[in-house]
Image (cartoon, rainbow, N blue to C red; front, side, top):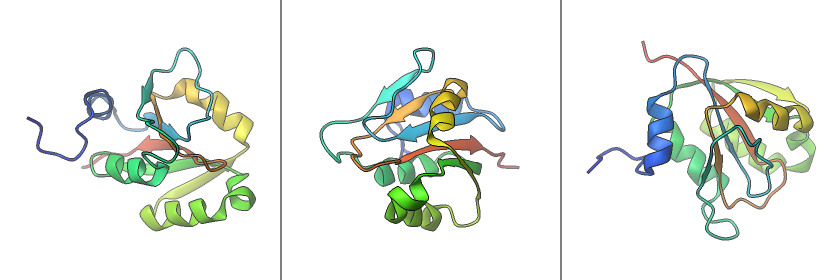
Length: 131
């Protein structure tokens, strides 16, 4: 049995197959996912699991060099933005309109759906290198 922290087989496989500058989307229960992007659905019920719980879990195995967030998170969900910044303190943040973030999901290896029910709790993680 796998010893590391990401034990969801689909998610673990996606992370293992990512290279430098590849993208992984993570978001709330309502985010529309393009048909061509594989969806890893972890949502069980409202807020379970939360966006932050899933993000923290992913970050135990994925090296991230940059993140993309919706500009709207600054006004619509500043508490979530604060948490993201706390978890990823030294990572470059690119703010883009939510409409663009949704379109960019088609370039992600996968989208991880959480049970999160707060607005603009969506992120694209750009993988870095560990060497």
